[in-house]
Structure formats: C-alpha cells, structure tokens
Amino acid sequence: MLRSIVFAIVFYLNTAVFLVLGSPLLLGPRRWAMMGLKAHAHASLWWLKVIVGTQLEVRGREHLPEGAVLVAAKHQSAWDTFALITLFRDPAMVMKAELGWIPLYGWFSHKFRHIFVQRERGPSALKRLIRDAKDRAASGREIVIFPEGTRRAPGAPPDYKPGVVAIYEALALPCVPLALNSGVFWPRRRWIRVPGTIVVEFLPAIPPGLPRAAFREALQTRIETATERLLNEAHSRPPSQRAHTT
Image (cartoon, rainbow, N blue to C red; front, side, top):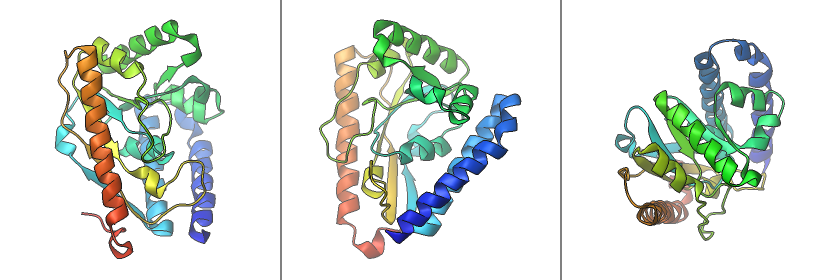
C-alpha cells in the first residue's frame, strides 16, 4: 500500500510536469508532441518498475505489421491508456470525446490527432469515427481501439461494441488482436498497485474482408482466449517469479 501511494504521487506529479513543461510542443510539429507522449509513457513505466516492482513483457511483436493497421486491444486498466503508446510507431487512439475537453491533456490529445467518439450521437458518431479512422490510416498510422469501449475487470464477461466491426469493414486493413493482463497489477478504480509482470501479447492478424459476424467472432474468441491464458499465468506465478520478465 505504501509503495502504491508513493507511486500515485510520483505518477501524477510526473504527468503534470510533462504537461506543463511540454506545453510549448502544442505549437510545434505533431511528431515532436508524439515524442513527448512516448517519453511520458516510458518514464511512467520506469517509475512503476522502480517503486512498485511492476514490469512489462511484450510478446508477439512479429504479428504487428509496418504501416497502417487496425489494433483491437483488451482494456482492463488505466495502465493501458499510456503504456500501450510505447509499443507503436505512430498510434491514433480511439477515445471518448469528453477526454478532449480536459485542459492540456485534451489539447494534447487533439494535437496527437487521436480519434474522438461521441457515443451519444449514435449513427452520426459512427460515421465520424469511420471518417477519422480512414484519414489517420491514410497517413500510415496504427488505429488502436478498445472494442469494449471501457475498462473491464479481469474475468468479466466480454462486451464488444459495434464500432470495431464498422472500422474493420471500412478500412479494409488487417486487424491485430491484443491481449493483456494489466488489470491484475493495476486494478481499475483502486489505488493499489501490484508487483509483477504485465504481459501484452500481439496475436496473429485477422485478414481484411471477412463478413461482419465472422470477424466479430474471430476477434472476440482470440482476445478472450489469450487474455484468460495470461490471467491464469499471472495468478499461477509464485511471488518470487512475478516480477521477472523474459
């Protein structure tokens, strides 16, 4: 608990420093701002490792192609929103529109040209989502979406939304599923942080052109099966091995 409190203080101070001192990047090229975003993510991961003892292991990098691609990631923790940034070349994250209204954080999110979703607008929101995703993909960026739309506790029943299917169909790009077990070590809605190894695993890409139902079934099955395996792995490791990476 003490380490978790110390890390929380350091994490938010670190974030504030990056936002305030990095604010001039809002006036520069987007790539400079993206470099600052990745620097913040790497620094946060370093503090998490040093203070709490929580590390990161990445598997299946060979499944992530160069250039534009759709990445559909499991979402269990706030950790996912910053740590996954380090794994991509130039990600465009799909995020809730209200996050774009937060001073500095939201301004930077617009600077990064992330993709904002106003879910309460229904069909018009989906059209804008597709339009923006096509625009970012045309620039060769990775489109990263959390198909369930919000954090789900480890082991909770899946709740995949239609947005990922619409983007997959519109982009005609491979979709790389991404499984993880971050919720074990950075639980949602709790201050506690747990030492160990968060595993992120890129799975074999789903080729473009599948019928909607077939794609949805393949995506959910692959992510949920791999995520369950990673959760079982995390729980089965003895404490002496949980902070070990390969």
